Length: 83
Image (cartoon, rainbow, N blue to C red; front, side):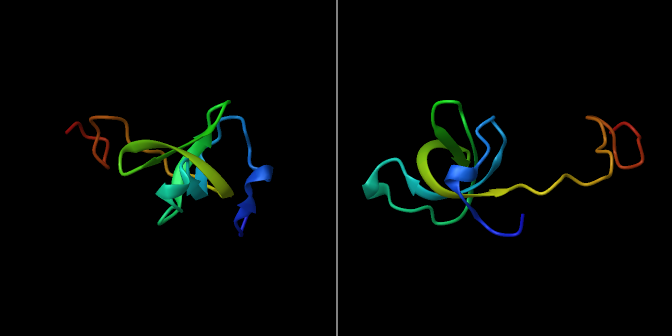
């Protein structure tokens, strides 16, 4: 996907994505930047600055695929040595 899509076309299966839109209350206004979030099964929930918000997204954008490299396990450095 190369463009923002209307929220009506977004996955509602718990897939994480970037969201754009308004906060739950009109006086809270529009997002100042895209935020990470997902549909919880009942409502859209976003995370930003470590805080969970309710929102009314208008658009969504899929997250990129993770790198092909295997991430090191906890406690291992890049060379596989224990830290």
